Length: 148
Image 1: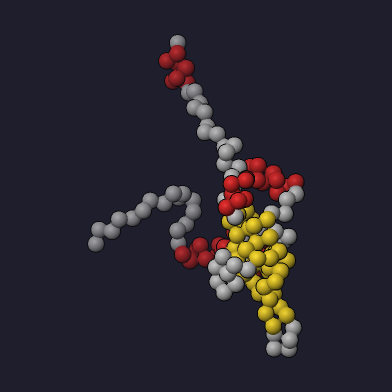
Image 2: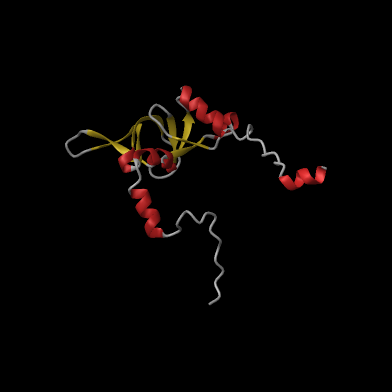
């Protein structure tokens, strides 16, 4: 009966399944942008020292999971309401012969080519792990007293 419980990292965030699901499905558009992130390909990870980025229109992605595995294409739209992205050549035929885009979850894709603009470069620079230096120790009043 004596189960080991893991400590919560942040007491401000609930670990309740109910609350997590509610937060996910009632998230606003800007939160959904961050949730809808894709990993970068190995080459891009090496180049920018960044693991993932929020996906956007005109990025090129490769599907790595599901029935459309190994299919590549350009993102034609990011459908935030449904948490899916539409990729160029991933479509299916309807009964009347019309072609419709099939939604692919961003978590099942990797970005192979980024659409870079000024704001995207700023995000890459901010997330670059090589530039992050360890914080220097701050001197406290007691340290200053020891110096005297």
